[in-house]
Image 1: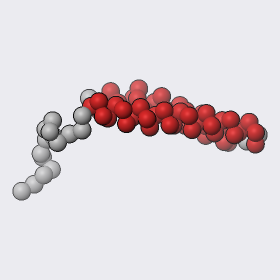
Image 2: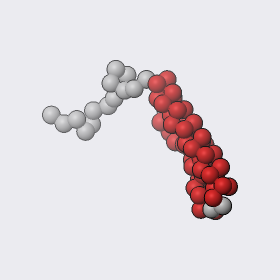
Image 3: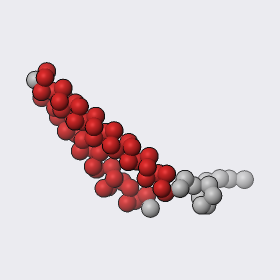
Image 4: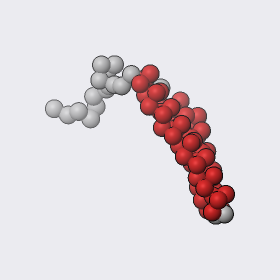
Length: 72
């Protein structure tokens, strides 16, 4: 018996509302973490840390806009 061709049924897949909440928490944490990295970069005067904060905050917007519509 193979499970490779088995399709997910609504009973075996996660509810979309729960997935939305989890993705919101992850993206919100990425956004706040990016802001924190950018704030630390001003104190330490490091451009690399500021760019890392920009990328992290940008990733918080890219995930829901690019990846989540494909998950429907």
